[in-house]
Length: 124
Image (cartoon, rainbow, N blue to C red; front, side, top):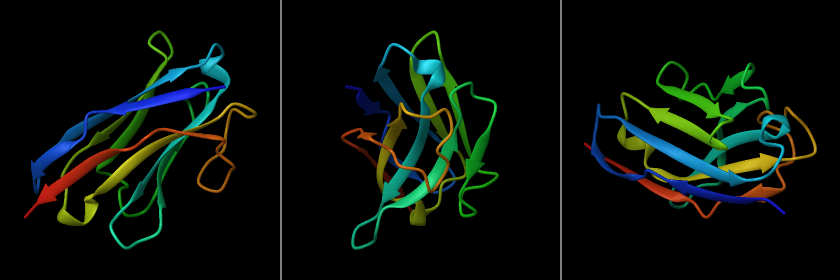
């Protein structure tokens, strides 16, 4: 069983920044594939970014490439998402996800565990 707890969401003006955190309760953090997804009101959940277990491989959605940075800290069992140059269209609930069965899941892999979500609201 893996528990994921997100934090760091909030209200920010367009052009601002936020950092989201996802604390994972798992013994083998370095071998767990992780990712961030988001869901805006009235829309389906969409992929944002993914990172391999060792943190070397990352992948981003085109809509956030160059603005968001995914990272992870194995000493803290925590994954991060740095959100820069935020736009109103980035407004959504952001979820972290984990796949303990593999070290890389990317945008299309099966994530078995999900956090409760954290709200990010960007005002224009």
